[in-house]
Amino acid sequence: MGRLVPAVTRAFDILELFLQGDGTLSAPEITRRLGLPRTTTHELVSTLAARNYLVPVPEQPGRYRLGVRTYQLGSRYAEQLDLAAEGRQVAHEVAESCGETVHVALLEDTDVIYVAKVDSTHAVRMVSAAGRRLPAHCTAVGKMLLAALPEAELDERLEGCELAAMTPRSLTDPDGLRAALAEIRILGVALEQQESNPDVSCVAAPVRDRSGRVVAALSISVPVHRWTEDRENELTALAVKGAGELSARLGHRPAAR
Image (cartoon, rainbow, N blue to C red; front, top):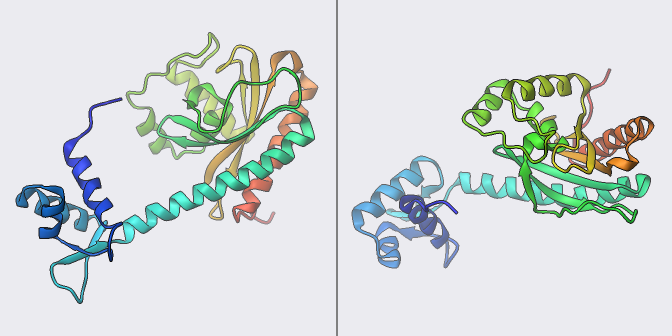
């Protein structure tokens, strides 16, 4: 774990105080409760207010309440909870159709976080779990999510990022990764051939929200001894169908042709 930044810690301490009582506080009350210097409290409160995390209470001069940015963060969190719940249901349906392991994952920085997993019905299964984090460039879901980013955002995320290998087949060359992502944008699906696990191959498809933005990816993972060309085609179609179903549950409606 990295070093904690004192100023950030104090800012979160201030925000968490508003979870208590009637939800309004003055700077002197914050100073007293947290034992902070008055100047420090003033600077932090001013910064939080400038970013709309706190707003003045109109009818109570000198007092603050939580601002719209905290609501937006909470709403995004709620959306992810809905995504996880809907993702589990769709993953179950896809897994029942193919008997293989199905994941739903989100992108965070340059990693993926699995929010749903349904195990294969076969005796040989993947060892993974919801909540697990993996480097995005080593996974089908991760490459799908990276490919969906605007070019400028992709550049920003990859700048200074070490593309570490999980297996000998992992993509560790930035140019090679970018070429793979360009192909994924054309195909609309992503494949992983033993890049995060030497015994597993995967296919992933994008999950979109009501605005059409890619917010997650759904993948089907198969031990390599069950991966054939015919099976790849079958699972690709199932992944696309499952991702489309999950997208529909999130409010996405494909554009009319």
